[in-house]
Image 1 (cartoon, rainbow, N blue to C red):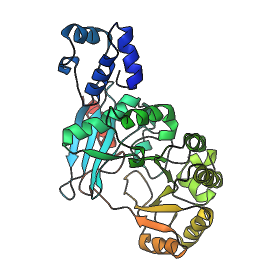
Image 2: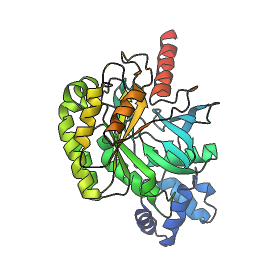
Image 3: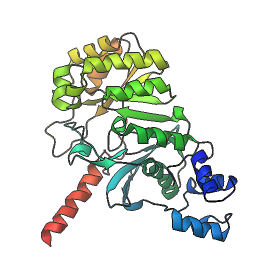
Image 4: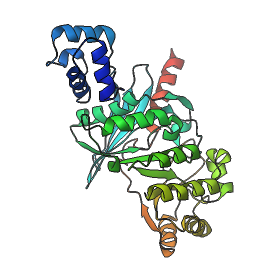
Length: 344
């Protein structure tokens, strides 16, 4: 029920023989985090009983929670109604609190340096499951969420219909009312999704996980490049900027000896010429199963980009004392579950 827009919920209540304003009441309760219809005190008891028989409220359970003693970053492992688990990270910045949410259970993109994709994709998340991550992170932490990044487990463009519905719900004035300019959507380069997003002209920030500017290197570390070549990706990004006027952020995980050469920095500058681009350099997380190691040339690479007039920043590392990087906590829980099964 919580994946319905206010208009749809109003129609649902009308079909149940209730006045239209009841839809707004139920919508408001759900977007405040009601976990049962009994909490909806401004509804009549007969209506609450009717809702119980015809509708279900699903609530994620905190399976694990880690809080960094270094910077207050909070990592949640949420257990969903079907027993699957996803991750959400709450990060505190000077401009407000940002929540990084997942869009799928697992991921099929296969990026070689990412822990999220190791076990593959299980299923897409529903709009309600994405919304619940924002809502229940806010309620559990007591911290008001002002910004959202869809950079957790999964590829948002691989679940775009549900992601767009989630954006509509979280943006609703009668719901959490988080503005599009406070939302970033990340993709590893699924070009049809970028084109579709360009046509919608949403005021969110598109973030592209680039990680290499040349086809050979990118195909080695990101299998998606074999379907959507990096040169076509750059072209799609230029067209996105021309259509929307929105600056794109390019994420770039710095991998030792793979993508951290000066010529690759020069190529990024060449490919981005003609549009404003922000390159966000990411110190690589050391994933045990991955052969790739963190680069020692982050500062030099940043300086090289800046010499071409590009804006280049280094992402601040948060939650260094917890499993804050994407996919690590879920992977750890899965490994422990397997060990438990093997010991039985």
